[in-house]
Amino acid sequence: MIRLLAALLLLATPTAAEDVHENVARTIRLCLDNVDRPEECIGRYITQCTNADPENQTTVGMVACISTEVTAWDVLLNETYRQTLATLEEADATGDFISQETRRVPSLRAAQRAWIAYRDAECDLRYSLYGQGSLRTIVAANCLLGFTADRTIALRDMQGF
Image (cartoon, rainbow, N blue to C red; front, side, top):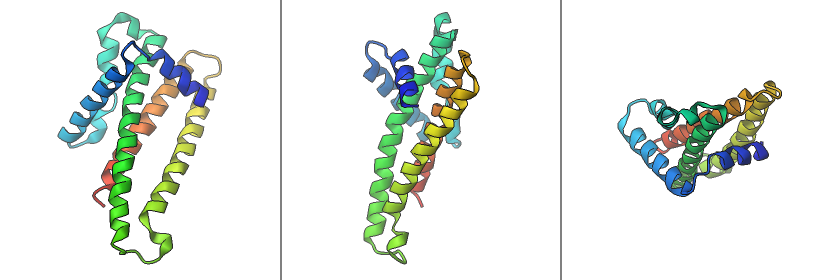
């Protein structure tokens, strides 16, 4: 899966990749702050990207568009994880837990590690289902997008537990 992700990200690396990813991440942040249903923010960039250039409607173009959005969501995922961790550290510091096993921070860390393993295994499975077909790269990229965006939203929601 790591090799697949690296290959997908290389396809999506324009000259100013960091600027593109940060701009897409900023657009997603704005969307998340202004919609009632955060899932509406998933895939917006892909639609704009594929419509912007006929080359982006090829398999390589679509994967590049999807990968750019995946990278932006990954930026947000890492930010949101750190914010959620800080929120839970503060909550744990108050001592309002029953036992050491109910501390929030270790639970979040364990859940995040398990989630990463599950996401990678599931997206590997989806990639392998399509054998040698070119559709497998689109399926795998969409898998990464869905899992990463959904986890970002879930972590964001945890901050208000």
